[in-house]
Image (tube, rainbow, N blue to C red; front, top):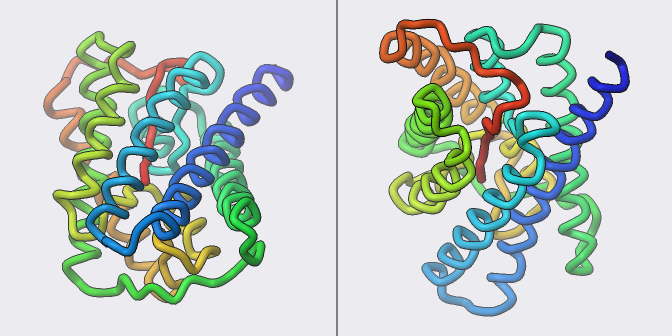
Length: 234
């Protein structure tokens, strides 16, 4: 059992590492390629969505490809994962995300850690994070519970690409992503002071999401940790 758990945690760590490297790295590259903010966002969204789909397909059978504490907590509430494993998932997701951001900084010859100065504390941005996270959770778990687990990677990638544009916060939708992105003062960053309210909004969405998922799929269909359920976001 320890070997199996170790493999699952390694999958979660690596998946979140590469997800954050993609989110922040593509943001830095976009800034280097153009000064057009709209084009920067498009490049960031497409790169993130593409890497996200690939990572979910890669690690789904290893860990379930959560890469997101919001997904893990929802899976825990729905009976798909036990408390000990869920706690370990959250720890490695945050650690992997932070190291992924550091790696992105270093790949572009920036300081390994550079605290973000991008203010995202406005109320409408916090509200957008709740909406973004709720939508992500519904997409993941309702697609899986409908028996279409093989489509989760593409459903999530499509949702995240769209959510970059229909949410004012550009859809972080992931506490691990939110915490990690404060370590880079670049296009995808968020200042540390803005992080707590983003995380509160995301966790509030978890509670609402659990209630809605249970209501819309009343027959208990626990999602196993080996099913391709993600996160991300961005």
